[in-house]
Amino acid sequence: MKAILSALAAGLVFGLGLIVSGMVNPAKVLNFLDIAGQWDPSLAFVMAGAASTVFIGYRFVLKRPAPLFADRFNLPGATRIDARLIGGAIMFGIGWGLVGLCPGPALTALGTGAVPVVVFAAAMLAGMAGWRWLVRD
Image (cartoon, rainbow, N blue to C red):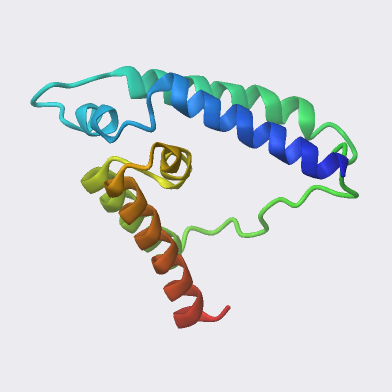
């Protein structure tokens, strides 16, 4: 139960951070990518804040023998940059650049009920399901 409440709290803090920073607004993200037009550098500050928090946090957390609510850390084992990683990153970047949303902000923005966000989230989930069906790891 502690693990579930901890995950809920982390998700709420993450979602609140996305809302406060404006990252659930696709126009804000698209304006960041529009360097020749109405460029909005605020996304760079959000990314810098997130990266520095993770950099510092991992230094403390990984010194522990295990997480607070689990027996061991579940860190990714893959360290190679391969075609699947590059292809996925390209697809993610294209989708993010076209729509202005990535999975976290899209799920957070579902609360607005905006039709484009709902369509994006449905397409994202369909794409994820399609990939699982196609690859079957």
